[in-house]
Image 1: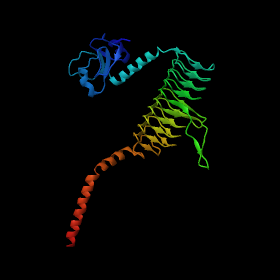
Image 2 (image 1 turned 90 degrees about the vertical axis):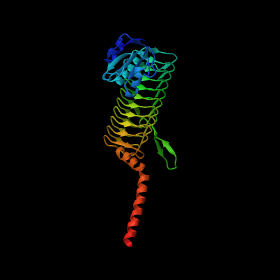
Image 3 (image 1 turned 30 degrees about the horizontal axis):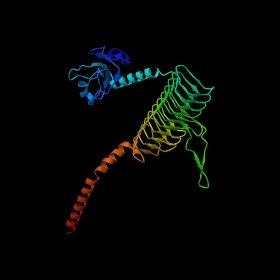
Image 4 (image 1 turned 180 degrees about the vertical axis):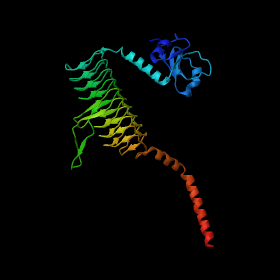
Length: 348
């Protein structure tokens, strides 16, 4: 598809400079873009490429002052990064709207139902009483167990497995290979040293506007629900255990693991490879640094790092002290020598 600079400016509420009829049909990074491509500049570190790029149209911040003339058409907006993200989202939606209908072969239970403008890819499985809303895309090799419900405008990418009774909201994106609703890790120790499985009879609820990365696992609750609240974003390879609650607009980076029954508030940020013990309360706005090991609950607005995790600012000061230990040791030895000398002089 081909768009003019004027059309693009209208989509992102921008103002054009240069040839408003300049057209583009694809996207490119500003340092690599070719003629016929659209690029953007948000990071000042890349400004040098603004004057050498071959891109036909470039989105820039409205307050950027040019150091030299350029041949490309500019579209000025308050925030180039946000505008470009909005444009990519619009473009993606347009491409996805072309997907429609049910491919074959698939298995769709006679009691399953789906709304208008739905896409169901080949080799998908829809169990009994599955319900899919309008404009939702189910890609090939997706498994939807009995009684699964998915809202409107959601996207379930290839190979996703959603076990029985799980509920998925609207505008949810679940990437390839993710498993929703597998059994929680529940085993009761026995007197003979063995472990007896505790049945996991709850479900998973994923609210609206959630995005979940590839190969993430979210376990069903032992009883009740494991809940991912609206606006939360989970990266690839994240483990969410049974009965966990992840708050609104919380973000969790790759390889993090959340143990059972931990409750995470809204607006929390959890770095990659962080591990959280079970039955904790992480209150709103907390920040957990990458590779932190959290064993205690956090009050609202806390920032922690390390394993075991402790206050971020104190940790940074401790690291600064640790770096100076060799010099401090040297000074300590000098002081000890000076004290010995003074004591010796005093005795004599």
